[in-house]
Length: 237
Ligand SMILES: [Fe+2]
Image (cartoon, rainbow, N blue to C red; front, side, top):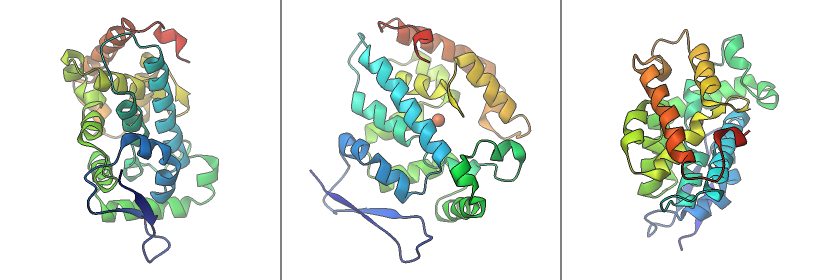
């Protein structure tokens, strides 16, 4: 097993990064899950994002614990959800009332600090959240399977997810798509919330012309998943 350590760059305000032994190709998913608090802390992940990712991971665990379908990889699904939005701060709206409403009161006390972190992320990685998340996944040396789940689970890939036989991706997609800014929602409420929140941001993914098709696929993925569990969508609250 490869060991890893956390180091801090010379400037205390810099985003921390992790270093690994050179002979380690990728990290064991369980080791990363067990160190998730340290990872969030090293990457200065805002509290609302931590809550979103841990709630999605917990939702997937409920499905996994009640799963009776084909073989799935529990650790890879849970880790994917714990890491899937690591780069989201680059698209945070920290200027308007609507955006600030989503920030946890503790982070809100140092809004300039949060803006600085966003600036550092954009400078160091990119201003596209998916690119940022991918780069961090590489830094963390997550395995290729987790990287694939993170890449494929997004709602604008729902058409392929619906047709696919990859249950890890289906469960990750569904688990993420049930989580709103304040916790678990029905799929319908979740997509309505997304449309409303990004109504004035033309380039947001939710404003894709195929969004209603993606939503329709989300409901079909829900049916596929719950045909393989002992619980119903309404049991997840
Ligand atoms: Fe998410």
